[in-house]
Amino acid sequence: MVSARVAAAGISPLDRIRQAEAEANGRLAAARQLARSLEVEARAAAIIQQAHEAGRREGDKRRNEAVAAAEARASVILIQARSQAKRYSDSGRQRLASEAASAVRVVLGVEQADGL
Image (tube, rainbow, N blue to C red; front, side):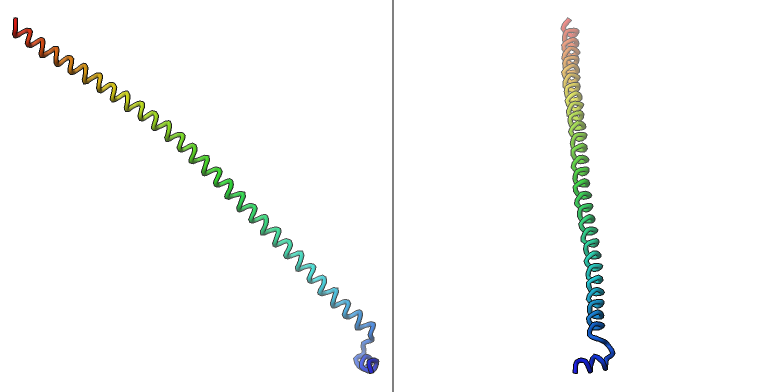
């Protein structure tokens, strides 16, 4: 009976085996190609992720360096401003003392002139 169906189909058992083997080889080749594609995509995704992380680290590093440099410049400016403010304050005090002494001399001089 099997041979009758085989004969009716016109395909020998050996040809059926070869056909099944060819189909299996085709599915295997397709699976390998899919695996290679997935591997390439996974590698690309990993490279992209590494690039993002490296970029983030580099950005953080540059931002931290810029903040540190800005803080250093601000510190120098603050020191200079305090120094200048102290000089102005000292100069103002000296001037005030000098003007007060002059005023006292003028007053005493006027009083001495009146007393003569």
